[in-house]
Length: 305
Length: 305
Image (cartoon, rainbow over all chains, first blue to last red; front, side, top):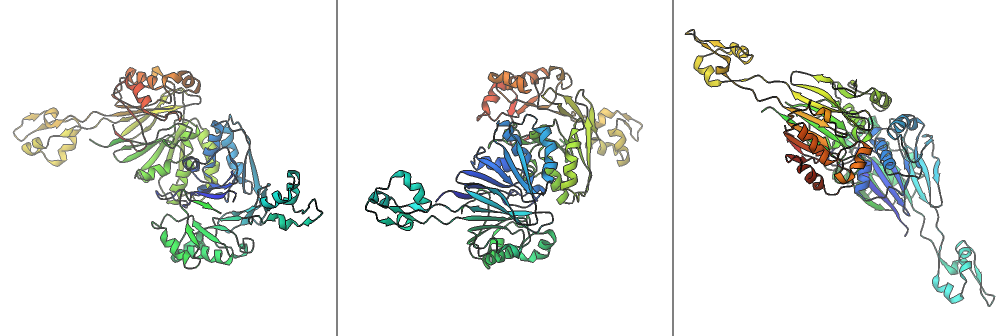
């Protein structure tokens, strides 16, 4: 299976604790890295986890609260000090982020060696914000105190595997293999036609990862995420603080689990834990009663999608 | 002795390493806290070291490079979330810092519960920027790539200690003690005059702490810092990188030590280590050859001045 890993760099909420760092994640898709949110301290945690700076090309910011973006300036400065050449693309809702960061970039990174390209998107409806040979990334409209979107990473459908034994048996030349992978069959030297399905094994199914934070549960997103392989959903509070969750635009662990069930997610990872909880297992237990295939995020966790 | 402690929160230089955090220090002067520089991650390190947020009233920024100020936004946001009431005073060279931070403060801390008061100072000559009953804080003009100042914390002269045995022996009433501490003598019931010096023991000498980072060595500052109790001086490089030090406006460990000797400092602490060194003892050894009473800064170090 080709690499599709999610690294959790931080999974606490806004108030700093000694147990969690604020939000940041890195996806490794076939050795191309994508960052989701970039809280204060992200660049250090990135280093500690041994991730490659040079393979990171794009950062996706869910919303403009400090605990999701205060690490950008430090990260960009470091890239500058390291003499990075490649552009860095930053995606965020609306166009406020560029307006807020540009004066600091101009001031602190005067000798900047690479362009920072800001891409705004509308937070109101799902849209494709990134698309390459490997992956399509769409926004997931969320419901928080400010404009906020999650992100759905959908691996592109893969080509089937060629059956080595059939290639050898039929002595199919190398130049024909691309066409067969692409869907064609093969007529052998005796004039017999072999169907595509006889020459190949099906590709692994394309995988999907969804990131939903910060948000109240949004039932209408379940359809879009139906059957997602891994769902990260915030679970800031326990159910006994449901009123507080509603008031601050967050979810309880039970709500995160109910959403995972509704979306028929294969696995659920919960995070963005409030600083009030010293034992995250309380959140895990609450979620597991509703959706058993759930794990707690923690700093350093690697999830293979 | 009343408290006069320096806590090292970070003593690396701009490029992040897994060994050091970038620059931040906290002074505890009789339980009033002062911060010097505030790099990314400072608030978390502050928490880890068990320092009190509510006792911090003033932050002194040496210069506007990211590795000395990128932690301000996160720290201020956290104060806001915690419902801080007391004003926070931030001192920095010139007036750029307010211009750069104000738009972000207005955006990210909309519900701010306390005022942030910016105080600019001229980086060209030493001036008193803070003065209260306990301490006077002066700038130390430094020589870096951008406007940069160190800070000299001078404890106010203390009142002498009253001699308990003499008070009891002469039955001096409580109301007279303040005047005696202030310098007066006492005439006893037999009409004998006791001199101030007979009734008191001298106060501990007032102490001084000097912070010099980032900078090339500035000989002309030695006079101002003559006999300072503890001198923190940056030592970014070893002498074999003296050209690089000059080019980037930094000091070598040998230069830091030579400056400490010239200023007749009682103790030297070196820090702001380049990420190129994996063994800081190389820097220590180089400094110690010139100024033996030197220690390496490290995260978590507490220096009693």
